[in-house]
Length: 164
Image 1: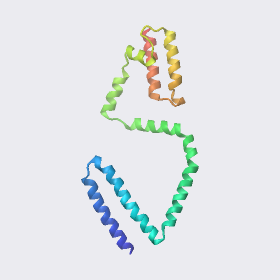
Image 2 (image 1 turned 90 degrees about the vertical axis):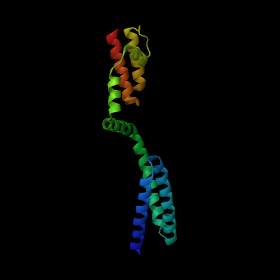
Image 3 (image 1 turned 30 degrees about the vertical axis):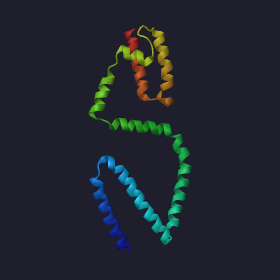
Image 4 (image 1 turned 180 degrees about the vertical axis):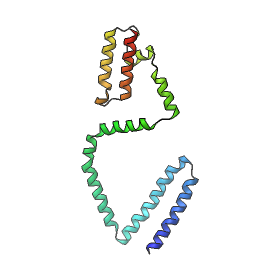
């Protein structure tokens, strides 16, 4: 009997894969969702009819209990996980477009620096330092801010202090 089930599964997987490959990229996501629904419902009906649904429900209960126990721990480390994820994504993204953006953003004009800090071009040294301090306190990565914004703010301060 198990051989028949395996044969049916292999044939269904073949036709499903053949149908998936014919779809465009935009059509694949709905196709996969629909296929998952059409597969899940008969499996649940089959398990219920044969009396084997109880172990699935028990496994679901164990998973829900585990997630509810581990969720507070995971949320406690959420800022570190977010920084780790952003570091991972920035290291793996070496496309030509991104490199061009990084080169263009490396050069900051005095006007751009003034816009970043929110000061005029005739601002005094103390006004620049005060504006920098105010912005960096709000956008520092240790307080949940973006490291990119903090770097831009620091670069703007250095640019304006050299210029004044």
